[in-house]
Length: 168
Image (tube, rainbow, N blue to C red):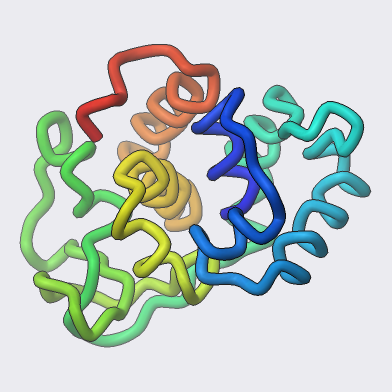
Protein backbone atom coordinates (compact mmCIF):
# COMPACT_ATOMS: atom_id res chain seq x y z
CA UNK A 1 0.00 0.00 0.00
CA UNK A 2 2.89 2.35 0.82
CA UNK A 3 4.61 1.69 -2.52
CA UNK A 4 1.38 2.17 -4.45
CA UNK A 5 0.81 5.51 -2.75
CA UNK A 6 4.28 6.70 -3.79
CA UNK A 7 4.06 5.22 -7.30
CA UNK A 8 0.76 6.86 -8.22
CA UNK A 9 1.84 10.26 -6.90
CA UNK A 10 5.32 10.59 -8.43
CA UNK A 11 7.29 13.70 -7.68
CA UNK A 12 5.19 14.53 -4.63
CA UNK A 13 7.31 15.38 -1.59
CA UNK A 14 6.73 12.99 1.29
CA UNK A 15 7.83 12.22 4.82
CA UNK A 16 7.39 9.04 6.84
CA UNK A 17 5.04 10.89 9.16
CA UNK A 18 3.00 12.17 6.21
CA UNK A 19 2.78 8.73 4.60
CA UNK A 20 1.81 7.23 7.93
CA UNK A 21 -0.93 9.81 8.44
CA UNK A 22 -2.32 9.35 4.93
CA UNK A 23 -2.32 5.55 5.16
CA UNK A 24 -3.42 5.01 8.75
CA UNK A 25 -0.03 3.67 9.83
CA UNK A 26 2.52 4.69 12.41
CA UNK A 27 5.67 6.40 11.13
CA UNK A 28 7.68 3.34 12.18
CA UNK A 29 5.39 1.09 10.13
CA UNK A 30 5.87 3.30 7.06
CA UNK A 31 9.63 3.29 7.63
CA UNK A 32 9.68 -0.50 8.06
CA UNK A 33 7.54 -1.04 4.96
CA UNK A 34 9.93 0.97 2.81
CA UNK A 35 12.92 -0.79 4.37
CA UNK A 36 11.44 -4.18 3.38
CA UNK A 37 10.63 -2.83 -0.07
CA UNK A 38 14.21 -1.61 -0.49
CA UNK A 39 15.63 -4.99 0.53
CA UNK A 40 13.27 -6.57 -2.04
CA UNK A 41 14.44 -4.19 -4.80
CA UNK A 42 11.03 -2.56 -5.02
CA UNK A 43 12.13 0.82 -3.64
CA UNK A 44 15.23 2.99 -3.93
CA UNK A 45 16.07 4.72 -0.67
CA UNK A 46 18.65 6.82 -2.47
CA UNK A 47 16.13 8.06 -5.05
CA UNK A 48 13.25 8.03 -2.51
CA UNK A 49 10.89 6.40 -4.99
CA UNK A 50 9.55 2.99 -6.01
CA UNK A 51 11.41 1.09 -8.73
CA UNK A 52 8.46 0.98 -11.08
CA UNK A 53 9.47 -1.92 -13.34
CA UNK A 54 10.14 -4.12 -10.32
CA UNK A 55 6.96 -3.00 -8.58
CA UNK A 56 4.91 -3.71 -11.69
CA UNK A 57 6.45 -7.19 -11.97
CA UNK A 58 5.69 -7.90 -8.31
CA UNK A 59 2.11 -6.67 -8.59
CA UNK A 60 1.37 -8.66 -11.74
CA UNK A 61 3.16 -11.88 -10.79
CA UNK A 62 3.68 -11.98 -7.04
CA UNK A 63 1.10 -10.07 -5.05
CA UNK A 64 -1.47 -12.85 -5.17
CA UNK A 65 1.04 -15.23 -3.55
CA UNK A 66 2.45 -12.78 -1.00
CA UNK A 67 -0.98 -11.43 -0.03
CA UNK A 68 -3.54 -14.18 -0.73
CA UNK A 69 -7.14 -13.02 -0.55
CA UNK A 70 -9.24 -13.98 2.44
CA UNK A 71 -12.88 -14.17 1.41
CA UNK A 72 -15.62 -14.16 3.99
CA UNK A 73 -19.36 -13.84 4.21
CA UNK A 74 -21.65 -11.05 3.12
CA UNK A 75 -20.94 -7.75 4.87
CA UNK A 76 -21.21 -4.00 4.51
CA UNK A 77 -18.14 -2.29 3.13
CA UNK A 78 -16.22 -0.53 0.36
CA UNK A 79 -16.46 -2.05 -3.15
CA UNK A 80 -13.21 -3.52 -4.44
CA UNK A 81 -11.82 -5.71 -7.21
CA UNK A 82 -14.43 -6.19 -9.96
CA UNK A 83 -17.02 -4.24 -7.94
CA UNK A 84 -14.99 -0.99 -8.09
CA UNK A 85 -16.36 1.57 -10.60
CA UNK A 86 -13.21 1.33 -12.79
CA UNK A 87 -14.28 -2.21 -13.76
CA UNK A 88 -18.00 -1.73 -14.14
CA UNK A 89 -17.99 0.08 -17.50
CA UNK A 90 -16.08 -2.66 -19.30
CA UNK A 91 -16.78 -5.68 -17.10
CA UNK A 92 -20.21 -5.49 -15.47
CA UNK A 93 -20.54 -7.96 -12.61
CA UNK A 94 -23.55 -9.65 -11.14
CA UNK A 95 -24.64 -8.75 -7.58
CA UNK A 96 -23.54 -12.15 -6.25
CA UNK A 97 -19.97 -11.38 -7.41
CA UNK A 98 -19.63 -8.17 -5.38
CA UNK A 99 -16.53 -7.92 -3.20
CA UNK A 100 -16.12 -5.35 -0.45
CA UNK A 101 -13.53 -4.49 2.17
CA UNK A 102 -15.36 -4.81 5.49
CA UNK A 103 -15.98 -1.28 6.77
CA UNK A 104 -18.77 -0.14 9.08
CA UNK A 105 -19.16 3.13 7.14
CA UNK A 106 -19.30 1.37 3.76
CA UNK A 107 -22.37 1.82 1.61
CA UNK A 108 -22.49 -1.49 -0.28
CA UNK A 109 -22.94 -5.11 0.62
CA UNK A 110 -20.92 -7.95 -0.80
CA UNK A 111 -18.56 -10.78 -0.01
CA UNK A 112 -15.89 -9.75 2.42
CA UNK A 113 -12.39 -9.48 0.91
CA UNK A 114 -9.40 -8.79 3.11
CA UNK A 115 -7.64 -5.57 2.04
CA UNK A 116 -3.86 -5.46 1.54
CA UNK A 117 -3.69 -3.68 4.89
CA UNK A 118 -6.42 -3.19 7.48
CA UNK A 119 -6.41 0.61 7.16
CA UNK A 120 -7.02 0.56 3.38
CA UNK A 121 -10.72 1.53 3.57
CA UNK A 122 -9.92 4.64 5.62
CA UNK A 123 -6.75 5.46 3.65
CA UNK A 124 -8.67 5.60 0.40
CA UNK A 125 -11.33 8.01 1.69
CA UNK A 126 -9.29 11.02 0.60
CA UNK A 127 -7.31 9.42 -2.24
CA UNK A 128 -9.49 8.08 -5.05
CA UNK A 129 -6.42 7.18 -7.10
CA UNK A 130 -5.10 4.97 -4.29
CA UNK A 131 -8.55 3.42 -3.99
CA UNK A 132 -8.50 2.54 -7.69
CA UNK A 133 -4.96 1.14 -7.49
CA UNK A 134 -5.82 -1.07 -4.50
CA UNK A 135 -9.00 -2.33 -6.22
CA UNK A 136 -6.94 -3.25 -9.29
CA UNK A 137 -4.46 -5.10 -7.06
CA UNK A 138 -7.36 -6.93 -5.40
CA UNK A 139 -8.49 -8.16 -8.82
CA UNK A 140 -5.00 -9.60 -9.32
CA UNK A 141 -5.15 -11.22 -5.88
CA UNK A 142 -8.49 -12.89 -6.66
CA UNK A 143 -7.10 -14.49 -9.81
CA UNK A 144 -10.14 -14.35 -12.09
CA UNK A 145 -8.84 -14.23 -15.67
CA UNK A 146 -11.06 -11.52 -17.15
CA UNK A 147 -10.58 -9.13 -14.22
CA UNK A 148 -6.85 -9.93 -14.00
CA UNK A 149 -6.26 -9.04 -17.66
CA UNK A 150 -8.11 -5.75 -17.22
CA UNK A 151 -6.33 -4.99 -13.92
CA UNK A 152 -2.87 -5.68 -15.38
CA UNK A 153 -3.47 -3.26 -18.21
CA UNK A 154 -4.98 -0.51 -16.05
CA UNK A 155 -2.46 -0.89 -13.22
CA UNK A 156 0.41 -0.61 -15.69
CA UNK A 157 -1.09 2.62 -17.06
CA UNK A 158 -1.63 3.96 -13.56
CA UNK A 159 1.86 3.16 -12.26
CA UNK A 160 3.50 4.52 -15.42
CA UNK A 161 1.42 7.71 -15.28
CA UNK A 162 -0.34 7.02 -18.59
CA UNK A 163 -3.98 7.56 -19.28
CA UNK A 164 -6.46 10.00 -17.79
CA UNK A 165 -6.70 9.02 -14.14
CA UNK A 166 -7.56 12.36 -12.55
CA UNK A 167 -11.26 11.49 -12.57
CA UNK A 168 -10.71 8.56 -10.25
